[in-house]
Length: 311
Image 1 (cartoon, helix red, strand yellow):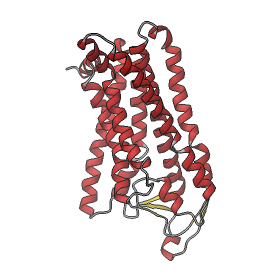
Image 2 (tube, one colour; image 1 turned 60 degrees about the vertical axis):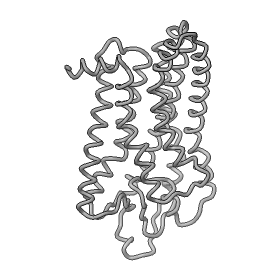
Image 3 (cartoon, helix red, strand yellow; image 1 turned 90 degrees about the horizontal axis):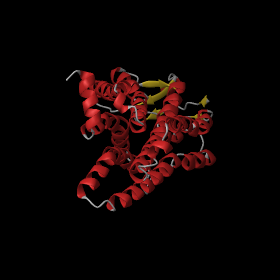
């Protein structure tokens, strides 16, 4: 990667400048405290689910194994952005190295893609459990579950490998200021010395696919689930069937709702403030809420967490 500079001030900078949330020093310290608490709560919540599934034999089923892996993913997803954000709150320069920026870009989007794939296979698991209950134990075996989990991680981390290698080899000019709290591709591409339409085309083609393909798969799975549930004669049976996938639907709505607002709107350009807020929601708030959603709506998980905490 080559870096050019057009000003004296930028010539002394050894990386990009992440503006984050510009405010007074007192405001920066307040934000540091707030996001530190949110980060710790996210780690504790998702870590509790992992421990509950690990130590409660009743939760050693595909649905909860997938949930534990999903919680593990959420821990790393939020860790790809928040620690650097916290460091920036206390920093005067707010500089992130070039390698650090591209690594954050790669891990953030790879983990986000992996999350989309996980949401899809969790929907597939619910489809099998509700629409094919008699065949569920023979189809969703431990081996298939493990294969699906590995496939999600491999697909997620290979998807953005080529785009990040291409972008990291480009030349950057100007102030190198990114008006965001993370290294987002939009601001990065805007800082390139000359336009690269081929790179932009490749990225704009590859980026939506990990969102769109799993989303269509999820919608297809729940369409079949809805059709099967509506055929259940008793209202109690329908409620029980819906309750098994209610938590997953809530998580899908939170994540995809915010991501589609950000990347799926007719206009790809958003004000910097809007970008930050929406990105903050799906990258920080959603991983915080997921353990709450799954624990509040699931009796087995609530019992396992109470046992884990000694309540």
